[in-house]
Image 1 (cartoon, rainbow, N blue to C red):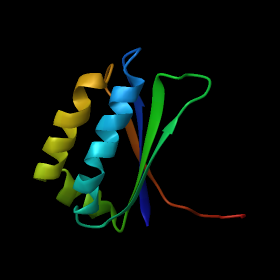
Image 2 (cartoon, helix red, strand yellow; image 1 turned 30 degrees about the vertical axis):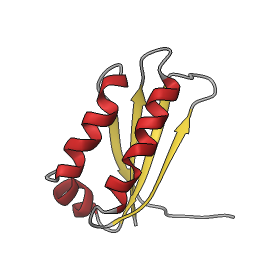
Image 3 (tube, one colour; image 1 turned 120 degrees about the horizontal axis):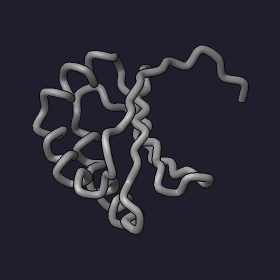
Length: 99
């Protein structure tokens, strides 16, 4: 599995609305090819900073199939208005699990 990690800065004071938008987007991801998991994490030290971690079966499921999908456009429509600026995104693979 490949994990997409998107670091997202949101506008101050819109945390509940952003989190609700991500919750509303869960069905979009569930029906996307190769999407296997999704979680949203909020920074304790920087409360306007979130990490959206999405598990994909393959890199192409994200970089090709999802990026060309209507689901991505709908996700942007739901959550985009709460985002403060460009997000940083990277893909990672698990190489060691200790617990």
